[in-house]
Length: 185
Image (cartoon, rainbow, N blue to C red; front, side, top):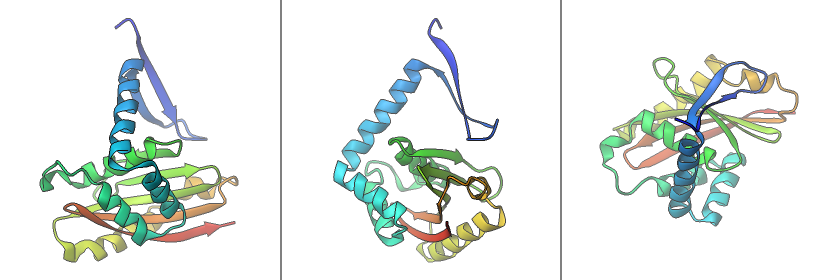
């Protein structure tokens, strides 16, 4: 590959590698395809509404908009936890908002770190085939954020003024979400 390169991205104040893309062409295709897909699924005003609901911790509205954006052409079995995790991460990667994905680093510990300017959020991602389990999964996600201190990096950063904890649980082609303000300086 004549245009091959290794692009490495790191978390602020960390040497931990978070993404490796083999070349500019793959990076550009990924970025453009992702933006195109989201621009078709969510009109500009809907994207703005989705991000406003996210940063205002309006979980009900965010979950409704997110449910509406789920891909219509895929089978129900595809909405596994890893797929939902990737989908949610991709929504943030399609914008200028910074997002870092930590998929399944252990049993039930999938989470996403999101930050923009002086705001940050930690998102626990869950999925189930049973609507009756959704509320319990939201509780479990919130507890995992606290127990595993997923927000420690944000708490240590004095530039971060607001931190939200989010738990998002998917069931088939819908989702529920819960948000809690964790820190406001």
